[in-house]
Picture 1 (cartoon, rainbow over the protein chains, first blue to last red):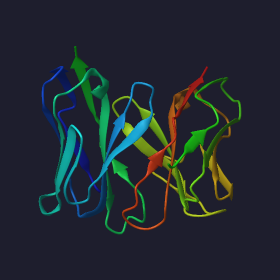
Picture 2 (cartoon, rainbow over the protein chains, first blue to last red):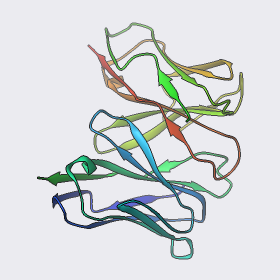
Picture 3 (cartoon, rainbow over the protein chains, first blue to last red):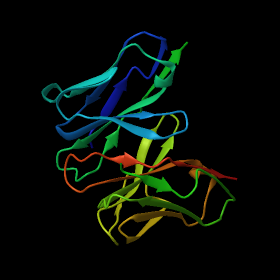
Length: 110
Length: 113
């Protein structure tokens, strides 16, 4: 099956700093989503981004499908950004099944 | 807004008990999914369903079964709970077709003693 690797596994930031989270995948995809899991366990959709660039406030994401990676940018980080960030992809022909990376644990310190 | 709800946030059960986890979505989604999440392993797919009364095994179906009698409801069943099924269980739903956004419920933390 498709492999999804996220890096770094853990990240500690001072409030106000910027960061880049990376997701590499091993096959062509027709769906890529970034999720944030808050401390209570809820996964929140951040972006649906199989290709191109999107921005939503302090967050933005870029997927280069031909090179099989996606980047999530967090600018001016806040303590509420803490949690686990997951990248999930749907391989072409996978019939709606998402494969998740193992996640990146982000801690933003005040 | 899409809403996916799960019957319990926290559950404590004894080894050997039969456990039912319920998931309901209110957006007429065809596809529904059950995952479990464990530290260091990410989310792993247990079962999914494309439509009413249809189900397919995911990556780790052993020890679990599912039921989908109505489109909005997808149940996960642990026939005889074991301690290695202690985990966070997450339900999700989405529209059919490639490239649709997937939405998650709040999760159920299950402890099997």
